Image (cartoon, rainbow, N blue to C red; front, side):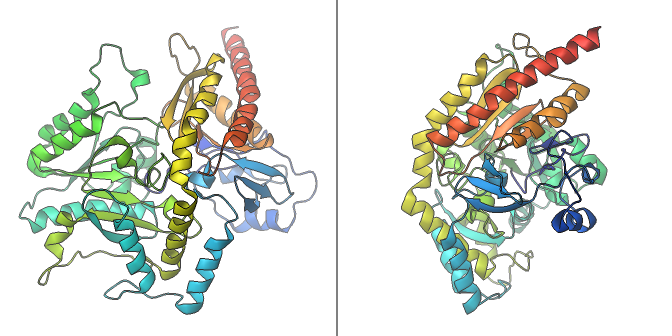
Length: 491
């Protein structure tokens, strides 16, 4: 995800045109009697994000989640759901961690808020130092934000400012990948490689350039394994080397469905960036804090970025918190004389958020949650791979506790579903049926249709068995429904 993740889907019906959806649609639970107070107030006043608001009426309830415990959440009616998405790739430590709330309360009682604009406070200082102790290489400078989009926005601005401070006045472009999602603010949206999300808000911040992603499932067998990396160099040279400020990539790309890199991909990208004086930003809003088995995703794939953007799991989402982590060499031009990085957010490094971040790292270290992911990801993948016998399952991919299942019309040809079929498959059936059976996950057709899974890092065999136990019958029925759909279309 980067950034604050795109298509934070309507739990009721998905969003129009480009949505994903991961809870009940019109086929989901009906309201049997007059809506209660929460339902009425939600429909009258709450504007949900990336949501088809018209999906909710007297006959279709707004899913209202009221509490969580471990890998599970409960709705207002007391029904339990396995949170197979960690809310949105972010409740890494699991739900109901009282110690995180206690850390917030203790800090609020001591110092509820003070700004980081020319001031500092102990939680921000301690958390910055703690993060620097976990990052690889010289990534020792932590600029706090309130979330992922702000972190990406900050990274692009810092890349521009860094080059200008060194006399490269024309470097402003940012290269990212097709289908990649990096956030919703205007700069981050320029980096986002999803036209349907960009078009309603054009003109965007100038400088966004897009190159192919690493989805080798859709590549020909003859294609060179590192062609997507080499495409970055071609783009730099085409745009003009002296105009490109940075390349931003996720370790595992969220948009399109958990695209992993080919062996040597990031090493080639690092070489290309160094050769052309371009900075490398690792967007780890999703892939950090244990999600793929390491504190930071770049460690898993063995590359050293100039900056990391992070959020979500940094506090296990118990409070909003994000950060831009920069190398010492990036910070150096701004640490002397009258120089300044003229950028900031009121709530970046909020003391309560930083206190929760510190408590979250304590918890993750004590329980070795990254180690739990490494120990169990093979089993998780094996159980998901077991679904490949279903006619509708074309590919299973991902890393750690971050996987996607690509759905296809024909396994042999890899033919995908058209827009009308995808709408029926994802929002007309799958999202509602999975939710009805007690599994929260994500169905998405920003690229080809997928089901995406990202459970809390405390999950193990029992949760995996429950996930697959729900997925198998639902995907089997989905396959049968789509075959019937095709038969009717041909008739």
